[in-house]
Amino acid sequence: MEKKYSDNVIFFVAYCLLIIGCIIIISSSYNATKVYKFTNVHFVYKHFLFSFLSLVFMNIIQKHEKHLKKIGHFIWIMNVLLLLCVILFGHSAKGAKRWISFLSFNFQPSEFIKIGIILQSSYFLQKNFYLYFLTYAIPLSFIILQPDLGTVLLLSCLACVQLINKNNKINFKLIFISFLSLFFILIVSYFCFSHVYERINLFLYPSNDLFGVGYQKHKAFLTIINGGFFGKGFGKGEMKDFLPDAHTDYIFAVIAEEFGVFGACLVILLFVLLGLRCRKLTTKNDYFAMVQFSAIILILGQAWLNIASTLSIIPAKGIPLPLVSYGGSGMISQGILFGLLLAVSNKKSNVRS
Image 1 (cartoon, rainbow, N blue to C red):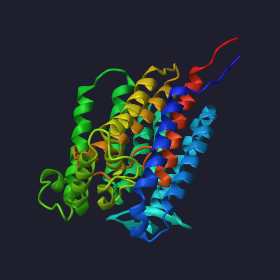
Image 2 (cartoon, rainbow, N blue to C red; image 1 turned 30 degrees about the vertical axis):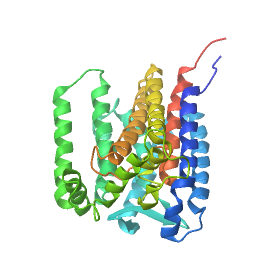
Image 3 (cartoon, one colour; image 1 turned 90 degrees about the vertical axis):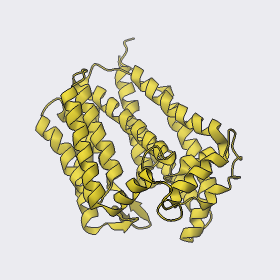
Image 4 (cartoon, rainbow, N blue to C red; image 1 turned 180 degrees about the vertical axis):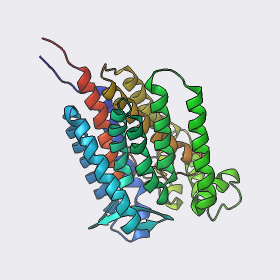
């Protein structure tokens, strides 16, 4: 008899991150409501709705693991078409065209194409390398045109580690080619896109423009150090009111200010716990093993990029913290990624009674 259960540790991490996100949004979004002239609870209500929807999609996906291949085909095709629509009809913000407006919501297809790429690439990696290549090449071509270098970098790294992990052995030639390709993308982006040029220059020379392009990074740094070890307390952060995007890309800085090093480390430990748990989840099915591997790489990779960018370890990326930062498309897509991890845990739980 087939008995299914969902992994409690993955559920625990997901719920903890969602709860942390809901708490911090209450504190971090107030200044944004004044900037955009919304009601004081505008972002709070929306974030609670997005958190609920992410849980709904998480549970739907984890209960339908047998249909993941079909779901992957549909998600990939639909979002490639939507990425094309973004190029043609999308609206721009902060130097990039990434969103499609629908009623009062902004939809970001580049978040959902990650799901389609995981499911499609995990299938074609074992079947047909050319289709595997096209699974990445087509959507990445559209994403580069937006431009969204952070997502391109994240998905390119995912392709590299998928290929390296395929045969469970290190291919140094493949690693060299992969890093050479990424370096080429960075060089082209540096000279072709002004906002990439500014962010890299800011990273190399952080003190050049503290009140211009470098204002956000500088304020994020001050927000973090203002928290000390135990933080100022919930809602008592002072620097967050001067930090742009405090409720989205720089929400980790708000966590550090209000809950200190202790709170920041707690968030990091949740992602570490997730990675360690997924490492123990194994399956003999090559497809599901690659889906699990790819999903955890994307979740942890996105978390690392967000935290590293906030701490100025790398140039600013504009990538949200999974299940914590405000953003409908990001929240729901991350919920689906956690659902994929839970679906793999279901596949492992075939026991006889």
